[in-house]
Length: 276
Image (cartoon, rainbow, N blue to C red; front, top):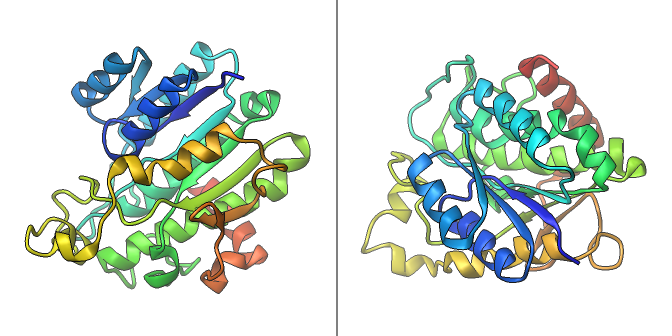
């Protein structure tokens, strides 16, 4: 059965790879990206519609939500794939630390603004997370903006842990109303998502002599799990509210990612931050 699938961060990397594969399999894919030129190029190559939004600007996210709501009679899958790792601590025009906004607040806001349509469509909401949620996070609910403690790698890990917590709380609040949710680690992908970052991750991923030692996988390979979650059915094929690695619920997680109280606190605090 053909689905309407919205993929953010689809102008490059695993988002673009997933868009190509899902379109090849007969689904209606809607491509969302920050770069107008790159996003249009991906969309035109597969015959898909596209929208442009910069997740470092919440006004763009609100506009995107309104455009998607008007353009799509239904949304069967919302893949919140946009994200990135950055360098020095910089705040956005909205006043939030960039890594936290781009990786968590923006997809949180987009999902919340589309809730009515997602519920009506009995949609799956997918979050591209990372193993950094376990290895690099020190999420502090009272310091989400990294004002007291900041490093680029920890900020990225915090954002990816927030993706998992958001997934679990979205499931708790809305699964009975029809929404299913999953977060996943795509693997260590050779893509440009850390291009320009002055962080350790950016250094490792963008140093030609080091990249081969990291055993990075291709974007096509990294997109496989997103494609699987988007195509299959929650319940028979995967468990809503879970975090996946290699097509299975992860065996090892950051204990904070399993904390229901923290998940509720993050949801409430995020809603306050974005004005919901």
